[in-house]
Length: 222
Image 1 (tube, rainbow, N blue to C red):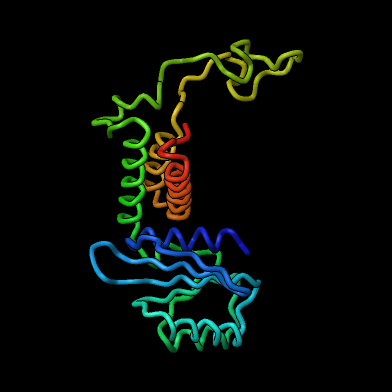
Image 2 (image 1 turned 180 degrees about the vertical axis):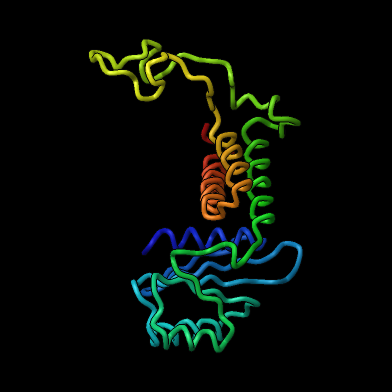
C-alpha cells in the first residue's frame, strides 16, 4: 500500500475534526472510521491497496458503504479507472489520489490555523506550556554556537575542505534545538508565501509527531 494515501486519509480526518475510532484491513482495502466529539457525524475513509481502483473495486466500496451507517464516505487510490470514479461520483463520494490538494478541502488560512493548533499541543506536551512569545521559547537561539559538524574548526576533520554546514566559520548563527519550533517557523514562512503544499507537509510532520507522542507516553522528539 502507498503510505502517502494512508497519511493523507489521516490528515484529512484530522483537518475535518474527526477522531479515529477504528482501522480495519481487508484483501483490497483499508478502512478508517472516525467521528466528531461535538456532534454525531461519522466518516469512513476507504483506502485502496492496489495500484488502480477499477469498477469491481468501486462496487465493493459501495457495498461497504451500504453496510456502514456513516455520514461521509471518502475513497483514496493511487489511480481511478474513469468508469469507477464516475460510479462513485454518482453517489457524491469524494475521491482523492496521492496528490491530495488540501486547498480543495480547506482554505489556506484554516490550514495554517490547524498547524498552529498542533504546534501549541506539542509545545504543551514537551514543555508544559505554550510560550507567550517567540523569545520565551527555548527551542531556538540566535546566539552563535560551535558547529557540531566540524567541532568549531571550520574544516572537515582530516581534510583541508571547508565545512559545508558552517561554510568554514566554525559556528552557526541560528540554532534550533526543538523540531516543533523549527516546523513552526517554517510554517510561518510557507503561509506568508502561500506555499500550500509545503504547509500541508508541515502539518503531516506534526501529525506524525503527535501520534508518536501518544504512543511513547507524551514524549516529543526534539
